[in-house]
Length: 350
Image (cartoon, rainbow, N blue to C red; front, side, top):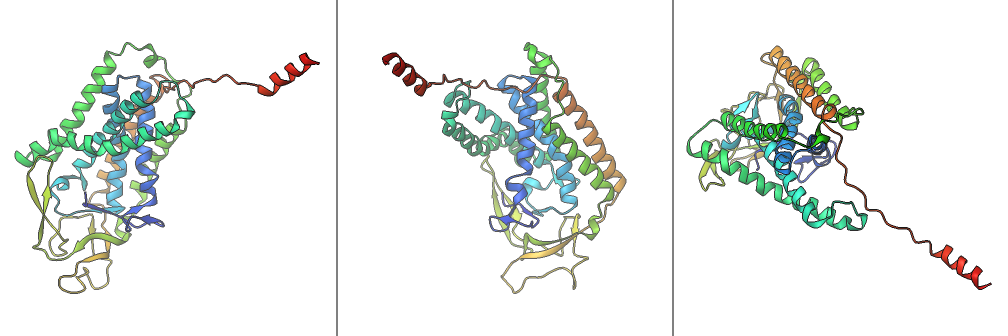
């Protein structure tokens, strides 16, 4: 997974690879928002997971497109798993978000069905935490299995473009959700939600409005990202990429400043031109890259605005025209008033 490098933030952890907003922010917003709002569809478990996955993609897509253009991170130049791009976003990024959000949902639901009761019991909080741990750890492996079932055989063996495998994968998810929704006999899925514009709906609105404004006013050509990127080194050295299907692919180990295909960055802002290795055999890991201008800003504006408006309409249907958010009943405990009982007994004695 060593195929992208985040831009530096005020607080960046794990060897300057993970800004704070990654650890406690953006992906949690995508998955949690989708998890809660998709529960209003009242789907069976086998369709709930794919629905959450599709929701995560709808929230991630404008972020992915604008994030890479504004150099919030950089991708590995030659990794075969992320080589196929759309607006410099690897198609597999959407596949990843859908499969892993779905996997997390499935495992979390299964773990809760086995470890906790339907009624929420605060005394079983350690079990609730254990369910989340299982889901977090297992999502990687179940998500990898979903990659191994479709993407890796088609892409690695038959050389099918990642665009086609991703569209096919998301289409399968969409069909599962549509089939389940059309056959849904649960009356709670059609009651509507009078108070649909809550914190989650506001978060979606803020995100989409932010990117709709950003694509109009941003100036990526003046952006400088000084930090960790793919190390600069020998242009000829390669390394192995092991796939779940057992095939071994190849990628260049180092970034070659004289021969690269990441057109969202260049070195026009770096005095003296592209940085070089400090000495032979020593790769350069920390250096500055420069953003590049929009080749066609109108195209980006059309794409981002269309995505946000389209997905906003879909989210409205889910949030307002489906049911209310599912809530687990809370287990009630009878309150024992020991002091009052003792007072009563003492009065009887007197």
